Image (cartoon, rainbow, N blue to C red; front, side):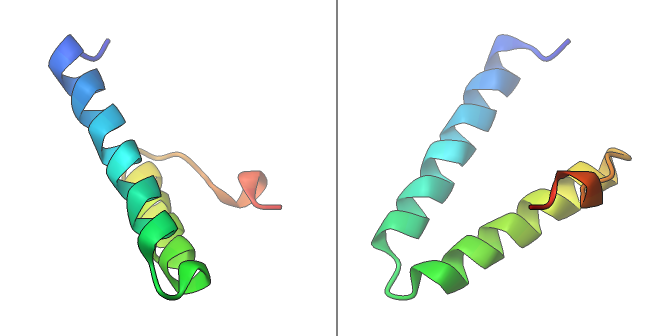
Length: 54
């Protein structure tokens, strides 16, 4: 179970990522970049993301 500090850090990362998307000149490009990073993080923990894709 993650500690409080780990959960807070994850929330800050999520907030920062959303702010980057919101402020990006090319929101589609930034969104794809953020998805790529998140997918890599999930797969590093063995979570298959292909079933989650729309």
